[in-house]
Length: 333
Image (cartoon, rainbow, N blue to C red; front, side):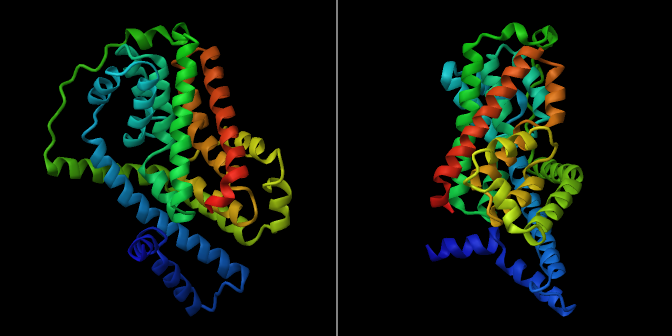
């Protein structure tokens, strides 16, 4: 157990980095006793930690992803039917870490290959919502109980949503070109170890280039919330005892465009100031699962009725998860 705590502190929470940033700021006379020192410490520590974890995690998951090209993913999903298909679709989404926007082309490919739309929606929800990065980042900010609980409810949300969509038989709500588009026909390429490393390095560069600004904005907001915004203001608006905090956080998060790397520092700061853990996670899940760009892209593939049903089901599911975390999450912190 002591070894696990040491590994967790060194590699996830990076206590050495926390202390190092404090030492460097101390050279300039900036300590936690001053607002500026506290803001800068939060900003520098979280930014550096997130980019270190981001680089390592994206390299790791991209290497895994190189073994799961779209054709292989389609074949795996095609073997399962019913709720098992939804479950496998959700689980496959957790190891193929596509963002919400890049998942849309795969949605078209899976649909054109004849996979049930419920299965493709389970994949579409879980892929950006639950992956290795979200697990380790949540563990680094909160703890392993919260991280694992988040994974479980995220997968359940993907399975539940996909199952409902399957039962509603909404195939006629998918644009005809998605069915007519040829399925993947390319042979899987056998990559060498050097090619897989190159693929993973390119993925790290590509993702860092796309998210760095959102990370800085998210960490900056988190630093201000954590050290400047009065705690009574947060607890009065988003406190665990406020029944409307979860719906409010979810609806605020839905139209935003960011990812877990940019939104997690905000969630961390909200919880530190007294917001319910379920409220913070509802905000995080709303941003991640229902980002505005992904909804716009999806609207080009599915008709308004299916798009609305998808958004409503996922939004309600996120709210339910938020209420449950607020009710029982204190025991996990």
